[in-house]
Image (cartoon, rainbow, N blue to C red; front, side):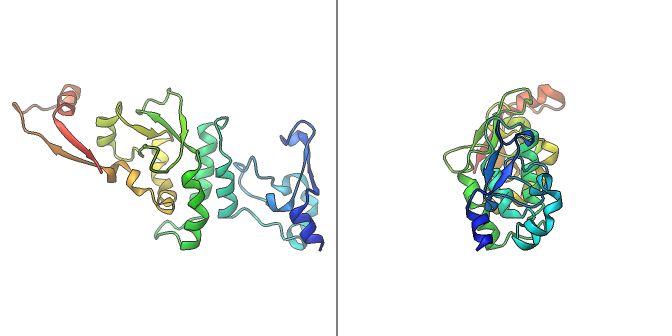
Length: 221
């Protein structure tokens, strides 16, 4: 009975000093975790507020440590006020809870499914990091790609919307891409090139690259 009340009623107070409203707020246990990564800024981590109440919250009431479902819920709450570092941290925490050497299980895919329609993926036109980013979904209506292939990214840098996250970290997000079924957004998968013969051969440097961009036909699958 007590567990049900804590799970459904707003019986836990979170202070304003920890960023939960001007006067603090009351929440239900179901919206909390006992502990988890610091990127859970919208999911209360009760260990921060009540470290001495481990027995009550964790053992008696069963407040869990952060699992995949909690990280997915946090991801759904990403909005325009968040910076790229926070988004990267949330995506990283999700991937840490997914298998790296094989495909996610059906239950994990089901947990991630709502993220595909959530406007949480930061994108920008081209690769210039100083440009502002825009949050988009991973549904078919929003077109963007993951610049995981350096050569293809160079040729498309001013033509496509790219995921605006640190390119050095992109490979670590592949479990998330697999779980969401958006592997076809990887530029290494989506871009195929076919050289078009025309004129004399040229070699070397940026001039050759500019010439080649005008003479290569790319097909985005």
